Image 1 (cartoon, rainbow over the protein chains, first blue to last red):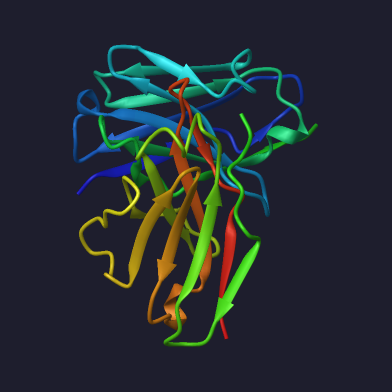
Image 2: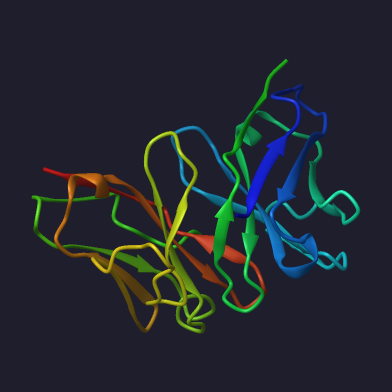
Length: 118
Length: 110
């Protein structure tokens, strides 16, 4: 059974960098695409970006200048860095697995709430 | 990229059918059969219900079905049950290899 678990600080100060890690168990990170998706409190889902284990990435154009997604295949983990955060970046951040050809998100982590506040 | 457009809410009595629309543009929903649907009960992570417009993953009841015409995809829940009450989101692959989600629809079982 594939499981994804987000981890990282729950509180980040404005203008600093938000960093989260997703640990994958039950499958190899080298077989799929992996995405970050966020959801501000009471609002809808927003795709942040994806990564393939080779390091190939693509990001939401509205966040592209501030986002970096990277992979550590030795630990079966991938990570999100979002720089220069503001209160608008406060959200539950989910990591999710994507099938290579189907382009859907078939497994999700439970989500991690990150609050941006001084 | 703009979010796909969904109705804010739909409702129905147990046993009835409800349909949720998801309207995009020619460079996302209109160009690809890579539309998926997600169910999100309050306080939980989204769950995949439909992929590639009309396919159900293992374990999803056949009461859930999907379709697409032009730039609009639809999710139909037949034989509505109390456990179907949740928020539903569509998602589409786009021409610039990104993904866009719908605005979300709250399904209420009366």
